[in-house]
Length: 266
Image (cartoon, rainbow, N blue to C red; front, side, top):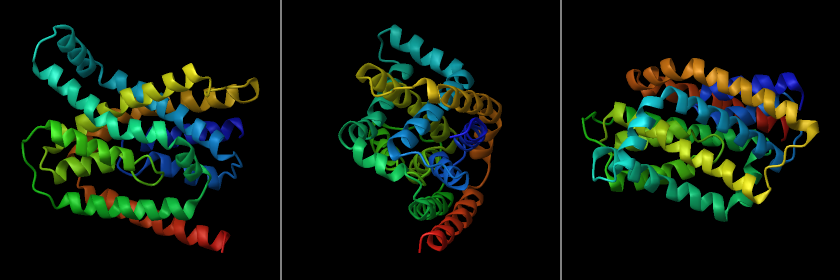
């Protein structure tokens, strides 16, 4: 992968992480357009590094929320911050189990199969269409909700299924307030990404040789900066705009990806 390609993919990740359009799906489509020939393991590694960058940008943007949660936990009381943190932990369980026991199988979906990505984008579009017709409420995320939303996040590990789209849409369909759903969605992924990085570092699986260190670093920096610039206004856009707009976008991109993939690999 060339340096400029890594920067472009980093920008794509930073811009699409906070919209319900599947950042991993766009990364796979971007890799295909740029002619990336990485094996699935290397492709997934690059995707994880970029997600790590946007996880850090999320921490920066939500630093007050994170500080309130940590402060509440340190008081060792049954307060709102402690309950919210427990819900975050519960939401991590489904995706953590998939990552621990099915990582090898998951890697195979990150090899540039744009027809599969297109099909998953159609699934994202359908989910967003349904969610946009759900009645908005002022209800908070419950403990059971957090487990169900965590299941949606686990499914969204597939490229083309939007993580934010799946989790926000699932929350709204469960009757959770859209603003609370967006906040929960963006915060729940941070410990999961950081845990994935820590696991790979401790196990020695995250190996960055000198030949790809510069490429990974450029992609990381581009995703982090793009995430910082885009996070605030994109989160506001998700909260205030109709999800149908994003559904139409996913539908169009999904159909184009399927047609292009079928034409290139009949």
